[in-house]
Structure formats: structure tokens, C-alpha cells
Length: 178
Image (cartoon, rainbow, N blue to C red; front, side, top):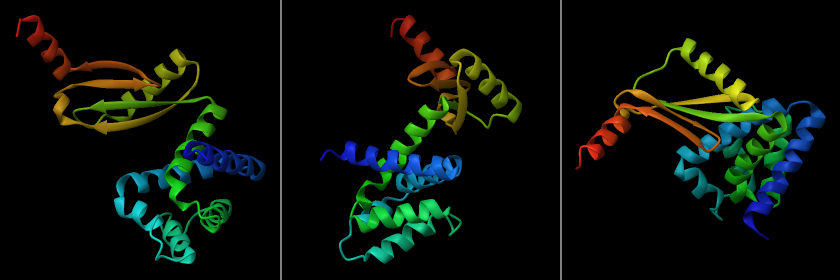
């Protein structure tokens, strides 16, 4: 069976259970945390595919990501997935759950990249503007990248507005015939 299909099936089942228990937002937050842990900790992926670790050790490791403050549903889900030998799919399951949740709640993910920290007032204005233009709720994720020198880069569901200084300098350089 295709990796994507497996991940989506588990994510759909989790979302369905979360809706039934009215904890879908809490589980969403937990799936964001889980995805982030897999993205940042390479050893976590290796641990999940390590045949020498017992199911109990893998479950304990996954639960530790949440400082043992996870919902009962997520705890049960972790046990279910590990018991079925699908722990290698956790990263994709977490991504799929997030996609399904955002689609269900009409949320668009917006990425803002700036050279320096952006104040909360500007973040709120961006969220409001995106919500109006996209007719959706906006979830803003920020990143600081000093390489853009100044300005910002705003990505909304595959669309990009690049108003960075580095982009302007690059255009100027090309225009000057270099």
C-alpha cells in the first residue's frame, strides 16, 4: 500500500475521533508538535525504524515529546499506531492530520519571512489582511532570515509576495545588465 494512503487513512481516523471527542484543536496542536519534533530531531526518525527498540520504548519516546501532557486520544493513537507497526509513518500522519484539519476548518497557512523580528501589531494586520483576501482563517508562521536584508516574503498557499531587499537588489543587478 502507498505511504500516502496509509498516512491519510490514519489521519482521517484520528480527525474523526478527535471531532467525536471535541478535541480536534488540541490534537491539531499535538500533531504540529509531533511534526516539528520529527523535522528537527533526525534521531527520532531513526528510533522509530529501529527494530531493537520495543513498542513500549517507542511509545514512551513519542509521549515524551509532549512532556507527558498529551491528550488521552493522542496517547491512545500513538499506542495504536505503534502496535500496528506503523510508527515509521508518524511524520506523514502528523502532516496529513494538519492538512485535513485546516481544510475542515477553512484555515490557510501563511509564512512570513523577515530579516528581523516582527512586532505583534504587524502580525495581526497581516493575519487580518490574509483572512479578508483569502476568505479563510489564517495561521501565521514566522521565520527570521537576515539574508533577505530587509522587507519581507509572504507565502500564502503556494502564492508568494517577495518584497525583500535582496530580491530588489537582484532585480536591479539583472536590469543593469550583469
